[in-house]
Length: 295
Length: 271
Image (tube, rainbow over all chains, first blue to last red; front, side):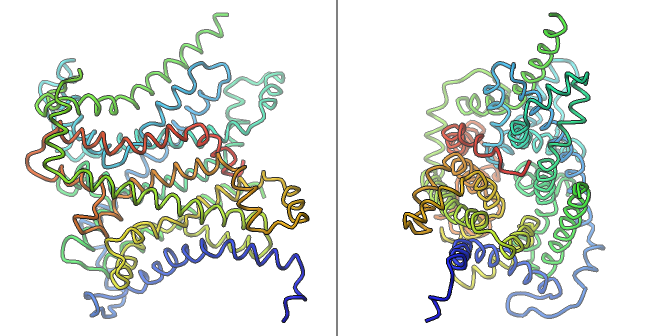
């Protein structure tokens, strides 16, 4: 037996590997293997066992598929509008709540986080009833004299998109805030005291101290937010059903429909999902590079 | 003094407005659950007397209890499996870290960018082949091992004193024993945070459930809510009650673990 020649260090290292194994196997089987399979399938067409190689046909088709292009535009809009909103409002709220003199801190924090505890399906239903033509929002707007009669918010492309984005920000802003709050609590209050003595205003110390120290957290939340924005699905299904027309259809919703609802086309769906993967990858890479200015 | 009071009022005003904006839809949901459909549509803001009637019509029209039990079962199973697998991995990555493990961790970080839409089709085919469709184990498998969770435990392990481990080793404790007897009890807030996040994610996992739980007897509660809205006639009182029910478990978990949740998030990401 070789066992005796293995030192304590090595044995500990082996224990470490054993601790990692279940998690690593699951990550590989549930992520890397399917991604590789999806890549292969994206170059095939046909159904079930009769998949045939079709070269880059699926990829070419994507750019002629007006529904896909529309869903890409929608998803891009959701991302560009909601991600900065969530992060900026999240940071501002965290800074406000980090004030040691603030009273009722816990109450505010809980209220603002609460939407994150609601299921997405539930929030979609709530917003649908609030923004219905004869729903609560219209009632208030009519009473205030802003509208003459109820406006079908979810029946018009522009307003349906806006409602969807309001709902996303409502649902996630508290979640982001919590991350920033926990990062702020790690900052030594002495740093601010010193800045104050040096005559820095609170605006100056926000930009010179708070923001730079929050950078790793901003990077982390940005990646998470962008990834979740690109994968918007629940809202598109439950709030608007992708409509009116396809004006609010999200990419993930379109992929789901192409794979499992209409005439199933796995190869084409995989090609579209590969595009999502590339977009997420490029955006993450840019952020990592941009955030890595320390070295 | 004036200088100090004005900003404080402004701060509180902003926080109050935003808090109201955040809470109002939930308030609306609760009120609507107690009203009849026509009152919900009419925008009634006072609690009504239709709660019991909505409940009766909801439970007679839909299989509420089985769906609820399914959701609880899937979510509890996912979060328990996830915190065990991810905490032991996070501990392993930090306490036994060396060049190779750090490198492996960086490679695994790539899974954070993998969109679920890209893996769901191959996973679905794999599930069909291995008879995992419509099963609890099938539901939980993709969300047991999450790199974000492993990261949470890895970062928080940094604060765990090495001296304790060393002295336990001298006392002859096994490595697994040290993990379960010393590490786990001292990391309660981290576990609470992980539990809250994984439970909420599993409860809200709509797309995956919709995809693999095609059998009526295996469907989740959010799926049931979603199906309720598909018909031509929607009873809003009944619908809002079901929405309220679908929200209760995640809110309960959040409130039960809130204190530790916030503490556990601290130090989760390198500052």
